[in-house]
Structure formats: structure tokens, C-alpha cells
Image 1 (tube, rainbow, N blue to C red):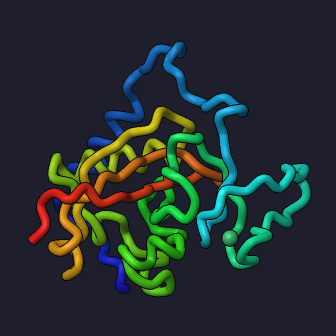
Image 2 (image 1 turned 90 degrees about the vertical axis):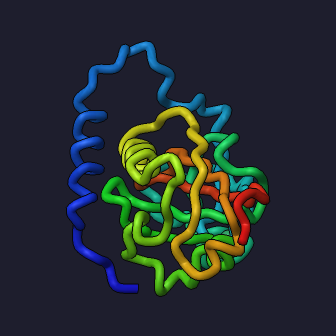
Length: 187
Ligand SMILES: [Zn+2]
């Protein structure tokens, strides 16, 4: 899928991101999830993993179940369970991965990789909401945020409004966007 360059509307989003980043937040804001509350999951099959954590210098973190995905960590409430439908994007909102279940919603991984999140999805509350929460989650561990989301694809109308849970995952740090149908707004 070709990645479009920044459109004029994106500058509003960019300014919104910068404003959000420069706003001083109290240091008592809960940010990093407790280690005990973090889970590991596979970036492809989405299975939750009990594999022991490896030392950071050991790069081998391939999933034992599917041997295709890598194991990432996130807060426990970011995923609804095994085999969740999600995509992962960078702070620039570039899609870096999609889960097997996510492919059935967003499309094939090889077409999605490198696409911009806002080229795939829109937020009924305003695209800047989606952009800001995903960009922030990709930069530092923060509270889970749930926003409504709709896909721009032809399937989007049939899927209706999705509930998108946005959380931090990694390493490397990125935004985890898990989607579930809400049953609303289907055409
Ligand atoms: Zn796997």
C-alpha cells in the first residue's frame, strides 16, 4: 500500500502532538505498568507467552507457538486474550506489524507494513485523537486509552465502529492498537 506524504490536515495533528509533548505533566502521573501487570505476547499469532524472559543481550525472542512472531511485552489490560486482532505502529504512526487476526480486519501484513495509521483508520472523535494517543503510547509507557475507530477500507463500513485499545508495547517501544467490534455503526 503506498504511503501518502503528510497532507495539510496532518500538520494540525503534528502541532497537536507537539503541544501534547511539551505540556508539563505532573511526575506522579502513573506511566509505567507494574512489571507484575505486564504480559508477553506474540506479534503474529497473538498468543500470550509464559516463556521465561531472556536477558536483554539475547536477541532470540521468537514465539514458540508459531515461530513467526517475536515476543513483546505490554500491560495486561491491553489485550483481551489470546489471538487478539491488533497492529503495531511507531511514534510516527507507521505500521510495523499486524497480527494474524488483525490481518482479517486491516488487510495483509505485506500491504500494511509502512502504511500510515491515518491512511488506514479514522476516529469519529477526530483523527488527531487517534494520532495523539498512538504517538504518545509509542514514546513512553502510559495508561491504556480506548477510542472509537473506523477503517477507511471497503470493509470498514461492514465492520462498523471498532473499539481501539491503545497501549505501549515493546521492546522496541511502539504503540499497540488492539481492535474489537462494537456492533455500532455498521452499514
Ligand atoms: Zn506466535
